[in-house]
Image (cartoon, rainbow over all chains, first blue to last red; front, side, top):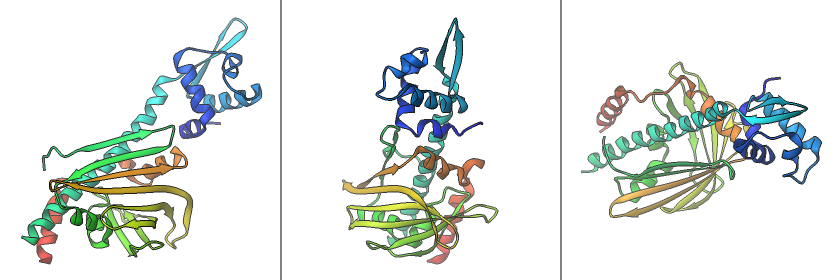
Length: 106
Length: 167
């Protein structure tokens, strides 16, 4: 199942996992060592992150390593940028309205 | 209009807050009116070519603004803004939620905190928007702006013409 990328970052544990594996590829066990939660819970988070295509798995010997899909993270910045643009446009419009009203009052 | 007025937009993903700061070359009372009076709000709230259409608005604590963002094709996306706190010319807070055309809110929404201050004839507005999830934020954009809204030069001309005709 393909999930929404925002589901991935909606959860604090998943955000923490993202931060961890942004630095280096890690095994599920190594990731789980950082949390006071069960190995199963971490596996579930990793599965969701994988379904969101935010992380990728790589087999190295007997271990599976998880690492971050940097390009995917950029999508988040992309839409935040759109949101910024809405406000920018909105306020530029307000500038015009304010200056029109001021001129009318004169 | 070129100016060197402050515009700051930051997002804190961990606290799920968006901060928007902006200065305006106008008196505080006028900027306050622009944010709290329906007839002025509708002139600038929707990024062109979208239009803001307020069905009703009652700016008082417990009151609400029920409005739509209308696409160029006439598609309406309704929202409710419920005012939870008002300190005239200083601050107001609201709960923002998407809604259907019959005014049924789609909860949870986002919490907005708007602060106004003036210095040397320049008014600064600082807005904090808290979203329970960043996915809600995405919805704000998805609700119609994805076609890529561009502020057309026509817009400015139209507004100025309309305003001068009203005089």
